[in-house]
Length: 102
Image 1 (cartoon, rainbow, N blue to C red):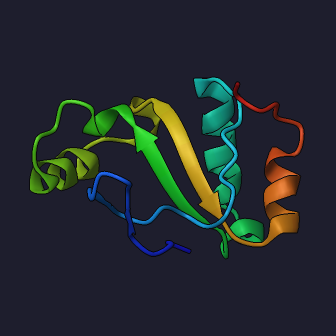
Image 2: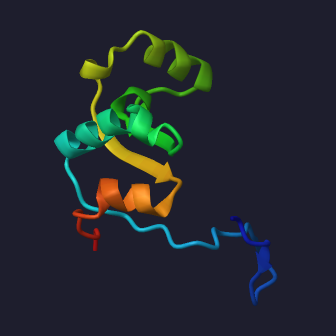
């Protein structure tokens, strides 16, 4: 999914970027929470999910993040975003009604 590194016209190396489009869709914290709950069901268990919450916002090490996350109930954190990857039909089922963020 990641392309090869590229050297620009000034000779500066840049890491490769993703080769597939990544749409960013609009939604609020409530909608993201609802999506997260759907993603926990058996129907969507094959969808790779990465959530972005306020738990990590003030954490400076991964170890502290783990500790904070393990002691925080799902009802106590706020979603800023959710990354999903998997079957296109299932992703569309989850997100098809959301508009593109522009």
